[in-house]
Image (cartoon, rainbow, N blue to C red):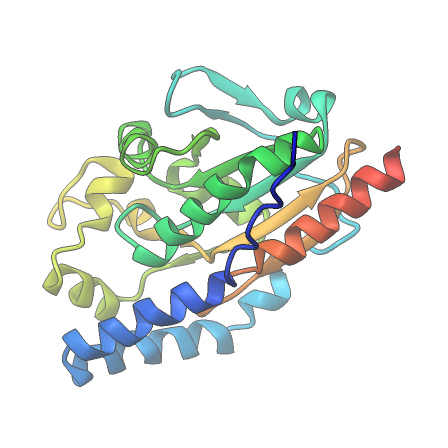
Length: 237
């Protein structure tokens, strides 16, 4: 039987850049300027320098699985193999769902290496379940209420006031997807988000790859993540 090699996937950033181009064609420049200014200010805050670095120990966690509702323990995952941890903002973000769909396409390869992939967001389990079903994702999505775990990874920030108005203007209800509340009754915790980031963790619980960006339009390259995972698997073997 002839084995047909898989067609290489195009770089994720190409797909993300197309989203940016389409957004610039549809959204008023003054609205875009508010969002871009917020990204610049978040970068200037030094948040990228605070991200959990390579060599650090994985913060232990227990978070609910969107599909089963059962708690997932990091120690149980690591007992089974290396771990890829992906933090994302929410299903309302086209960059996030595009990235998750890329990991959907790579999931079989991740599992073939004996590793596990989990995605984590501050969304409620119900909203994470919507994300799973709508995008046909084969991996678990865990709910991190108030981005509390993301805080331990150095990823968390609070959406500033001007961006809250921006999201409200484009009908993105972050407090609702994160806590079920409304703009008027939203708790401050429901406005906390993680910068998108990816980590590779070896079975001894040590971070071997760490990357995240203040600019939500840029994401860790899955090829780089997979290369780090291969290195972990080969080293452990």
